[in-house]
Image (tube, rainbow, N blue to C red; front, side):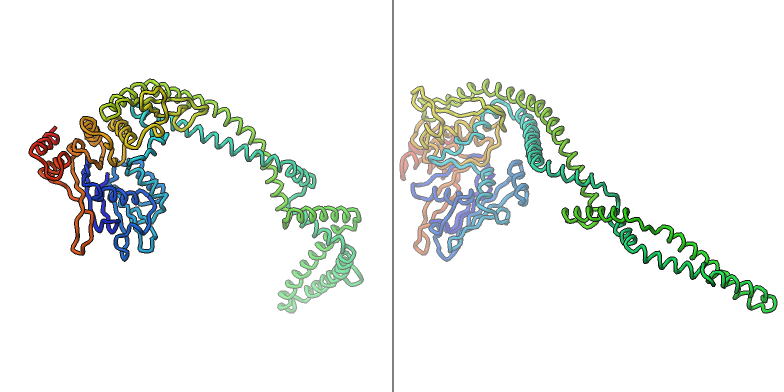
Length: 553
């Protein structure tokens, strides 16, 4: 609900503040007083583009600010959250145009783009102007009307949940098939790589260990020479160190009783002898393990060459990385086999969900087709009283080839404006004034069933008078029982139905400039304003009495 509209420095408005009622607000005033200018300023809030020509004072910026109560507007608050904007029970929307013509938009003091502004404010304000037929071009709106009056809201919610699941499965299948197609392009090459690695059959750290072993084999003769020399020095030859050390310990043992200090030294020599003997045995073992096998050397060289080739090919560093690549390729090939299985499972699930979706869509369609004639009759019964006696609405419910977000129907409001028997889409067949009255008739029927934003009608009563204008006023009043409505009118019958009556007028300031002003009329002022709409600037007693009767009726 619009709580307050503040306009500064726009066209001939230097400053204006408007606080509308939560029900029916009527705006009247002489032609040229500035009613349309107020709507022009409001359209800036709705995301319309602006230019510096609207600046009355070229040295100050233009500011239009609207305050909304949004506590019960769930769709708007969800959209705010999705746009990463502060969500609260109230919302302030501001539009600024600086002296250079640059425009900025803000929602709760956060800068936003015009497209974001337009999307969000469309959930707050529904502006109906002459020749504005956007609502009746909107298939979603027409579907919403039919479903609201067919009591389809709960059923449609169930359908949309199933439809969301249906679309999710389709998206998953599409993704898997794309992955499968991509995989098939690479599968042969990956299979070749895997077979190459599998055939190589490397073991953990094999290339590194083979390199070490090859070094030993390549230097086997030198290694054996060193080991044999060490062996001779320690345990073989004419005077081996082990034997000589053993002889020394035996001699020292013989004098240890005579020289007690020798016993400790001898123990140390015996330990050294045992260590040298152990070293000699270990060197002998190592010598026995050294091979001069030329065939093994060639085999190791072949394995290393193969390993280097694969490491270079895959830009890897060691054997274990090759083994990791092999395991990865095995998993990818296994996953590709799983793709077919997963696609098959999803396609089977899709058939089940598709059946559920189409069954629910058929229920929706049946209820729409059943309700359509009743909705047509109710709207047609209102067209005559509002000045369209020859017009007839027809609601076409046509089948779709595939389920959509609303089911398997396309809903289109058709109009025969002159009993011609030819029905065209409403936006093509109706004039600007007729369009507004048709929208009023439609929305008056959905008032209880649909959440609607603040509704603004600009001269919905153009081209009618008398009883037709009175019926428009009645419809507006009924609609305003459930929604905030603002209507600009020149018809006294419409103005008389207001909960709040605002009068727009021009006033000359001290500087000689003309400015638009607006004020809410008190009960006595309302009677006089309506009488003037009936009888001119100086209304007769009869006009005043007529005005009183219209207000009371």
